[in-house]
Image 1 (cartoon, rainbow over the protein chains, first blue to last red):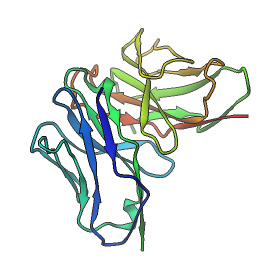
Image 2: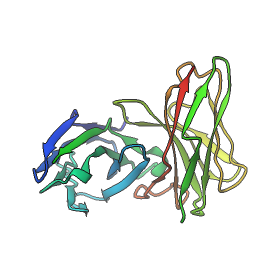
Image 3: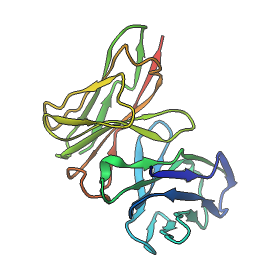
Image 4: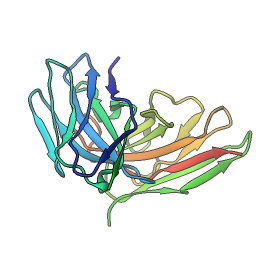
Length: 114
Length: 116
């Protein structure tokens, strides 16, 4: 079945460092890809998404490009802030099954030190 | 403000007891979902509902039950048959019936369930 694999955490960086969180996926169809973020004690919020190959999702300085050839959707940010500390989830939904079959990665905890 | 409200924030269950987690939304969304989150793991789908009076099992429905009597409400009952209920439970909703793969999910702030 469909699956998502994220890089192991936790990830600890200093403020203004460059961030990459790797995400690769396995899917039989043509999925849409998402990054969700979970701040401490809260539910998840959609950070960005891409619905087809070569699409780039972006929000709040974060970017991710849908790479079909490498089945990847890596999250990047050029200069992180303390407020970016959170858990980040990569996810996919298969076009044939819709949002109810959203498949999540295990999450990557990010801590940014001042 | 529109959103999803989950209650309580913390819940404790005794052995053999059923407990019910509340989820209410005022976003007028058709679809609602329950996910379970365990430490170091991704979210796993328990149940989902696309319309009132209809719901489907997700990947880990055993030991759980739901109802959808009103569009705004989708309570989850953790029954005594669920042998490992300690987890963080998240309710979500989406604007459509979930048939399009690019739909955004809106999440509540979660309920932490622990076994006494």
